[in-house]
Image (cartoon, helix red, strand yellow):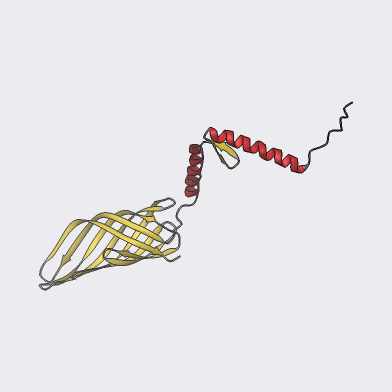
Length: 193
């Protein structure tokens, strides 16, 4: 005669081991199908990449470059500048030095758009020009309309590029000349705050 005992409840350890084994079997089956586990869900690697890309896009859209009340020191070819951004516009003092020619000016730029790492702007600049050569010396002015942008590598460092037409007039004691030129400015801005 066979004696059958009372069924017993599994221990917590037995339940844990059974759940672990079931998870291993499921994981092996899903990996055979080419799936990966991401945040508790099984999916294809492309789906994970798509989710992460969308999250980065949303984060960047919600966190554009903050420029209000920021000051930068700039190095441009061939000169220096100091810029202050207000809530939607900037004011910048610039000085440029080349062989026998110095230009000192001020520019005002209005922000057009901004994203996580790029700011575009439209503005104008007025410069006082002083020149000296072996034959003559004199001065003049430049009036410059510009379109440009800043590409931020970090919160504190940005590459800047702007371009546009400039009316430049210079003269000495005997002669003066004025003409329209196309100007391109390149530089790096170092933000202090």
